[in-house]
Image (cartoon, rainbow, N blue to C red; front, side, top):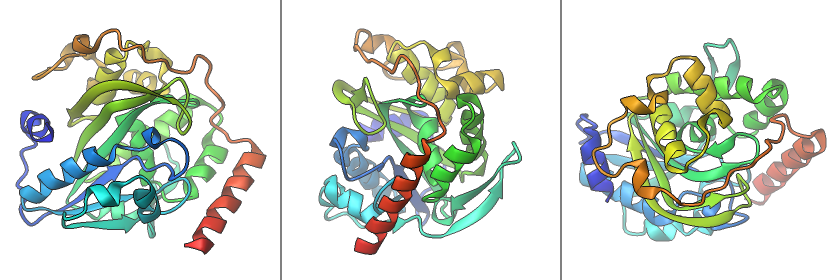
Length: 288
């Protein structure tokens, strides 16, 4: 299935001898497994790129824990056993100034690859409505710097969405694949309920993939801050009528019953949550 999706996307880059980073959603080793990108999906994508002669790395910046610790808990290391993949922690950072003027600490490991493969998870999000392809890019911000951005730039969903959209410009050549095999709905990003969609989506544009998935989930697009700001900025991918579907279309998944939060929580963390999260991260680092 991965081969079919990537082939129709016409990625168009020679891959032999290149370094490919797979960036799944590895939010945490705790909570339901559906909060993270499916282990077999990650393994399938890794195998495809290995078959093309690429060197494959898998990395993320989990909210709690490391890439390796979360991958162990989620069965990803077991699923990729026998595959020549390297797990990398987002351990070093480089400062980047975004188009909005905000300075962010981005994981160097996410930028120093030939191709960035975004492996997002389809799920609800209590602050940003849904987590799809574009939201998953926020994971290139290193470690606790994500929490600091929530505190310093979290005065509105739209402002925060704009910062995430600005991160797209920092990426190496990228491909965006979404795991909608078993989605997580009603609540998120960590504690929601499973919904079987049996869907894998792919696009060269993360905003375009988000637009398609919002249509597929039969959600009001304007309720997504990321889609709303992208549309206001004139991103071509925000126009559903200009998107081509070489395989299945959103209509093929009608009636899925996906539920997103009715009322969004503030982006800015409660101070108690912020400091307790910092302590948890520190304790996990010490244990590791």
